[in-house]
Length: 297
Image (tube, rainbow, N blue to C red; front, side, top):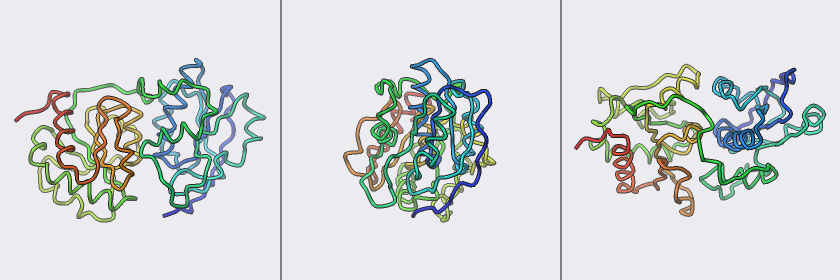
């Protein structure tokens, strides 16, 4: 379903600006998928960058403001959102940006995704194709996290409920119910993050005392802190992309994707499981629980 939300906020350019501007004209998940590209540019050229977001993604500012590879973040209007990304990808302000910055890179999708097209499950890979003008060594994209955090001992399982993907959520919760008895004892708590229009998807789990709904209060820093001691389970979502920025251990149920998307992950600890593949899901959990020394028979 295409969102008709149009940005209304236009913040002024920062006074103490960087020489380089990276714009992110997407939805929250798309924009987190862009962060490894911007981070590698900053790292490889040893220069902090400015980031332009649209107001729909303003919630990202609290996390991005803590990253030393970003100098300034400001919001702009001009974007109409689609099911992926937004158009115009340059906010309709390319010439204006060029008058203020020495270099400007628009990290969004350069085509309209409002119609049905085949989409790769690896959004960062898709973005690299659309942004081949960004001069970086793409082989280093997942060498290290672009969202820094204090790594802690794994104690929790986070289950993300994405309100925008009903079928994928239904299948991921169905998969989880099948193996729940085998895994729940290995975690101190199991947090359900996000909300869904059909609470019956996760209500059965809440009968277990270990299972609770996590309220981040709109502060993504609380999610980052929680992820730092968690394994993430869910569907493709904004939280999956945030977890990829942190490079935490995670399992993603890829419902309805082209089988070609079921490929080796980009970093150790990231598992993609096709819907209905119970054995693959059980193996992924076993691998990650053993890796983090929390598995008990």
